[in-house]
Length: 611
Image (tube, rainbow, N blue to C red; front, top):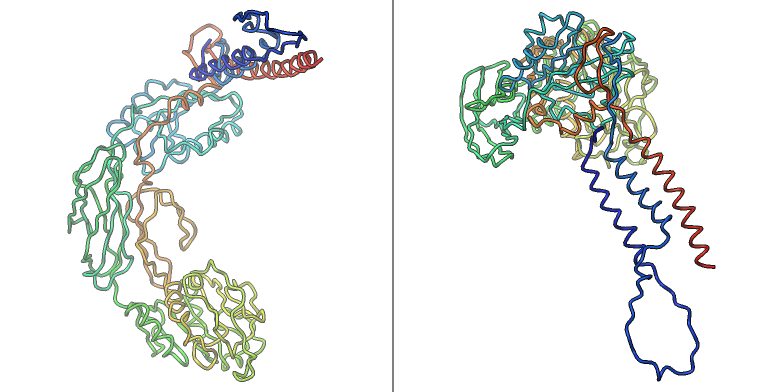
C-alpha cells in the first residue's frame, strides 16, 4: 500500500476540532428555589462530569467523516498484480526531440535510454509537437528539432493512435519533461483505456539558461543610419550577470552591446544604425558567448532595404492621394503618374476611369498584385467595376446646401486601414456609386446602407474598391483628420508593408502562394507571393523552450498513477506487472455515508436534548 499525496495526511489534525467542540458543550443547571443562602458556606467544587465527552456516537461519526476525507485526498492505493499492456498490448518507445532536449547531453542520454528499452516487438517514435513513427535505427540517431514540446499533444496523439490500432499501449517516454510543455488542464494528459505510460527523465533540477527572448526591428529601411534594433535578453534560473548582445547582418557581427541582467530577470539593449545592403538581409541578435542550449542564443529577423516603393496612379485627382502618402510615409512610396510598367508596381490605383487595359490589370492582379479602384462619375458609364466585374447600378449625388449627404455607417474594425486610422466622424460624402457587393468583403457602409469600401481576392492578388473618389468634390474626406492615416494604412495593406520585421516560431503555418506551408526549422525561409515580390521570413525556436524547469514530481507521479507502476516480472504466461489500485473513490463513498450518519445522529440528539 502507498500514498500518492502523503502531505494531505496533515489534514488529520482537524480531528481536534470536533473534540474541542464536544468539550465546550454548554451545561445547563436546573434552578432550585430556596428561601435564603445566608447560612451556606462558599466553596468551589469541580464538576468533572462537565469535562467529559458526551454524545460519543455523534463524535465518532464526525471523526470518521474528517478522517476519511483526509485519507481520500492523500490518494492511497494498493498494489495488485496482473497482466499489463505487454500481455497482448503494444510497447512504444518515444524519444522527445523538442528544442530543450538540445541542452547539454540530454539527447545523447535519451538515445542511450531508448536503445536499452527497445525489444524486438517494440514500436519506436519521435515526438516534439507531433508524433512521428521511426525505426529502431533512426532512434539511435535521434536529432533535436526546433519544435516546442507539448505533453498534451502527445497524449492526444497516443489516444488517436490507440483508436486506430485497437490495442492497449505500454508507452515509455524519454524526455526532459519540461514544465512549460504541460497543458493548461491535467485532464488533457489522460490516455486511452488500457494504456499506460512510464516517464524516463533525462533532466535533473531547473538548469540556468540565457536567451535572446525577442527582437524589435523595422521590416524595411531606406537609410539604415537611423534604424533602431531593440532586443530583450532573459535569464531563467540564472544569477545576476553582465552578458554581451551581438548584432549580426548576413552572418557578420556589426555591433556589440553589454546588458546587465538581474537574477532570473530581463534586460533591454538597443542598437542604433542598421547598415544593410539592398534586398533582404538576414539579421540576428546573439549572445556572446553562448550557453549549453544553443538553439535560443540567437534570434533571427529579416530586414529589406529598398528604394521608395513604386505606386502607379491612373486617372484623375492624384494630388490628394500622393500628398497624403508623402506626408505619412516620409518618402517610402513614389507615385508614378505615367501609367506604364505596372508589372513591378507595389500596387496600382485606378481613379474614376471609364476606359482601362482590362487584360493587363487582370493579369497583374492574378499574379499577386494589388489594385485600388476609386469610383467616380466616369466609372458609372462602364457599368461594372474593373477586374472584379461587380455591377454598377447608379451614381448618387447630394447637394452640399441641402445637407442630403451621407456619412460612414457600419465599419469593420478588424480591417487595419479602418482600425488604425482616426475615426470617420464628420466625413461627408456628396457623390458615391452604387455597386452590388457580390462576394466581396464589405469593410465600410454608408449611412444609407450602400457599400463604401470593399475588398475582394482575385487569383493570387486583391482588389480594394472605394465607391467614392478621393478628392474634394466627391467628399470632404481629404480635409478631415482621418484621411492621411487612412491613405497610409491602405497603402501598407495593398503593398504588404510590415512595420516590424517578420519573425515567427517554429511550426507556424504560413499561407503562401500554392497553399499552406509549415515552417518546421529555425532560420530563414524565402517565399514569392506573386507580383514579382519576394518575402523572407525569419523562424525562431519558441522561447517557451528556454525555461528548463522540469514538471513537478507529483504531476509526473499522477500521470503514471492510473496505468502502470513497478517492475516487470518474467513468467511463463507472459510479462507480469504490478498495478496501482486507487482507493480514493471508496474512501469518498464511506465519507459520504459518515456525513449522512452524522446528520441523522445530530438531529436525534438535538431533538432529545431540546425535549
